[in-house]
Length: 123
Image 1 (tube, helix red, strand yellow):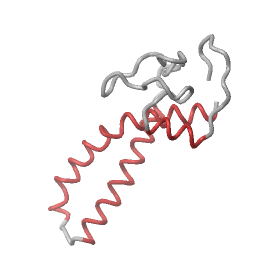
Image 2 (cartoon, helix red, strand yellow; image 1 turned 180 degrees about the vertical axis):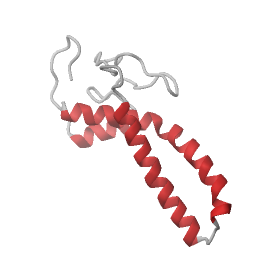
Image 3 (cartoon, one colour; image 1 turned 120 degrees about the horizontal axis):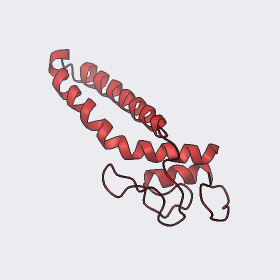
């Protein structure tokens, strides 16, 4: 995963990489911030200079992570509300539609961070 001239560093464990992803930090050094705004990433880590987006379409895997997490959360929420609170589908339609809009936006940064962590672990 070295796209720069920095010396090679020991490979962090998967647990460390996931922890860094959940803190939205660089998977390589754990120091640099992954985002400079809600949706904007710098080109490189400010500390170790790791290039975040390595190619066009690189973060497509992050979209799959985001979609999968949203689908699982939606399914659990639907069945919990439908059968736990006996709400009708009509009562659930609008709130769950809102859920499908808000949750992916909330997970966007974490999905990208997890994708970088997975790539760092594999590469």
